[in-house]
Length: 265
Image 1 (tube, rainbow, N blue to C red):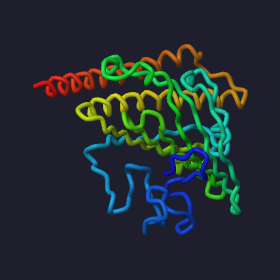
Image 2: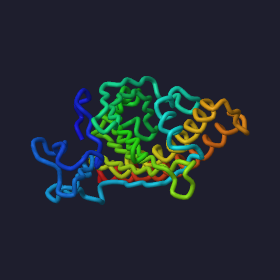
Image 3: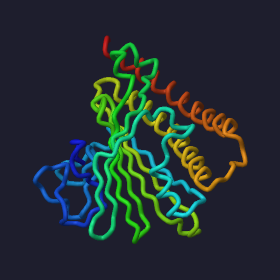
């Protein structure tokens, strides 16, 4: 994955083998499997990651809308009532390939609130905003859309890489299945486990908001009025996210406190 925002996007595992170089190893062709994962999750044998240093999360969701509707709504997600943390979005690259695939790279600016237990360890300006790069490829022929996003701000503190694959649901061709994976890592000495726990909790909470936002935009596109009021669904989503975040924050706080005491022993 290339962190130079202005360059041609690299979609992990989506381009035909032999058509590109491995973005993790400049000048080196792709792995024999034809797939290279985003750093630090490279599939090359010479750079296999330490699994213990990375938190992995995976989930599958279903939207009761067709793939065509979902792939169209994807570009109209912002703004929505569940995405107040997204400040800006800019397309920095777009190309239609010879086989009619749409390749894009977007730069997003999001608010980035630091947990209270971490405020005493880091400067205040680190918690104001973050830049996110999103690469995507839409393949109409196979009805597949793949996105890879990762943060380029505060990456040494915490790196979050997300990969989503949108496909037609195998059990109902009128629905769309979303397979979502995320890898959270931190190189912060003494606090890496606490940071990872916080990052995982925040990511899980964001998934809830993302799906609610998707449903809201899809309903709006079709002129439908949701059966439940926005306030009710927002309250439910916030409650679930708060419960998840609270449990993980308490765990992260304990890990941070333990690391802090250990450092001074």
